[in-house]
Length: 118
Image 1: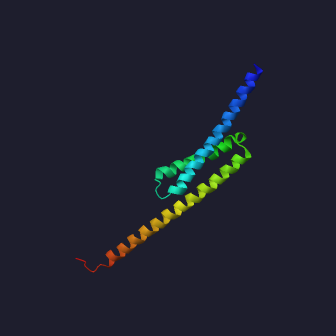
Image 2: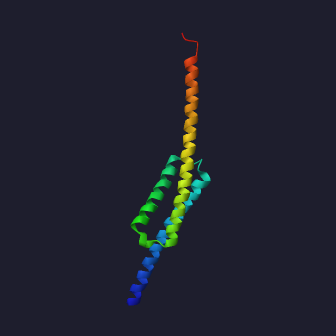
Image 3: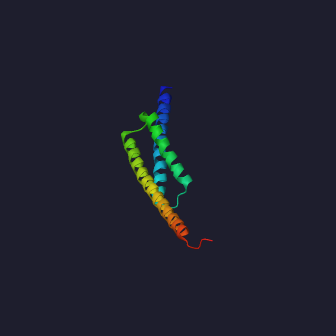
């Protein structure tokens, strides 16, 4: 009976470790996808990735005892990679918006200067 309880405890602990590692593996796959396909990703894709990273951070905060030091380090690497691609995306979005604004201003000025007033 005692062996059964110990085995059950070991299996529960092992499944908890696997759950943590599966979260890390899933987040890493999402980040790799974003790194390789950032231009094709929709806003929904970006929101999903952001949600994944927030959930991973919250889980670490709430369940630190389930994570090994190596897994905590891996989360830090994932956060760094996520931050890098998120900043690049926001920079590219800003540049595109600035370009659009420039084109609108150019069109506005041409319309304003137009001598064909009726």
